[in-house]
Length: 140
Picture (cartoon, rainbow, N blue to C red):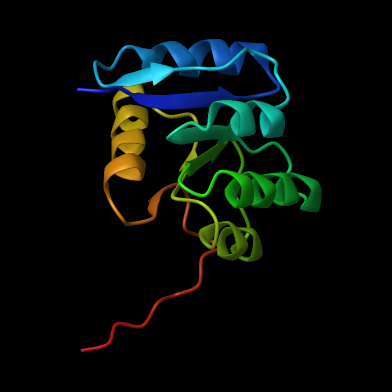
């Protein structure tokens, strides 16, 4: 069975060096790409199955980068993670382009489960504070 190819990107070396080995420890996952490489060109060159991206500021520049990745690598799934709480507006716009969101710190088992869900399900995976999220009304 072919392994799922994953790029892990973070501007902080300690974060990358913590997340990448956890993902690489799974039998069906393989971390690819050069540490510290520019994410857009690396994703375009390698065309990974999954991109695990540390969201630092949730600003327009980071959002535009993720949109460009999604446009140039249409089959690549995006899983974003950060240590802060995203506001409702940010969550709503990332919902449109990403396949999952993790709010750290995250236990290794949760990280691997989130990666699996992002890769193999058609659902958006959310593990974080929902304080700022809009209430969803159920239709019965």
